[in-house]
Image (cartoon, rainbow, N blue to C red; front, side, top):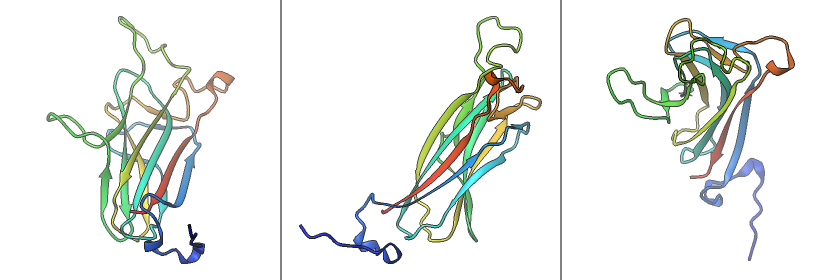
Length: 185
């Protein structure tokens, strides 16, 4: 079997088998933060410039988050093509008049039957992950943004921190990452 040597700066699309990884970009977010908006708020993003317009981009999002009360915090993903369109990608479809489409994660505080206070889970956050295989059909720069929102005003979505958020060891901060992997199409 003959092996073909490909220089990294001279990769040809015809030389790449479908599914071959062409590049990986990753961004992290380590700030303790809160989102108290019922509209989408950009948390952070990862940028990638595909080598070929036929490539796919596997977008992975890993978040350490919690939500303060009985309402939901929602996470979605936005694709922004430089000089082009901004689109929500992946996630579920909207059903019903009040539903929100393209939700990747629905973050809620744990509840017990009959709970009457906000003490359950104030010392923990949870790790959520999701991925989507995107077909952007471009060689322009792309930024994939993690978007967050709270579905009720006054009910914060907490990032990289617990609801209690003190400086004790049981409130140690988490971290979030987004990874964009270009795959030959």
